[in-house]
Amino acid sequence: MYGWIWDRLPGNVALKSLCALVLVGAVGWLLWFKIFPWAEPLLPFGDVTVDGTTTGGSDTVDESNPASPPASEAPTTAGG
Image 1 (cartoon, rainbow, N blue to C red):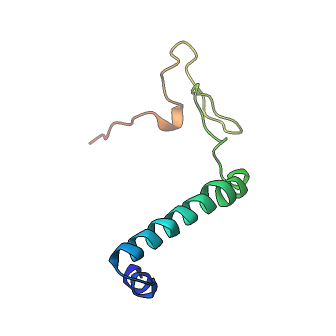
Image 2 (spheres, rainbow, N blue to C red):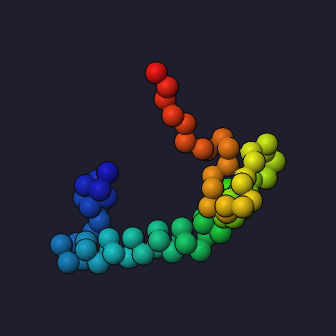
């Protein structure tokens, strides 16, 4: 794909490099200022647990030890 784009850019190597740099900058600007702000509300970045509590689940957390994982994430020992 990159070879196809490079072959379609006009001029010699210096001009192709400048055009490629402008093209990368334009794609970066489009992603940063248009696509990412549009997509942010659709992504689950707000569904994180920082304090060890969960929402909507039946997991229990040991309140005396804030660093303890919920019961469903507790390590299990293999017997046998």
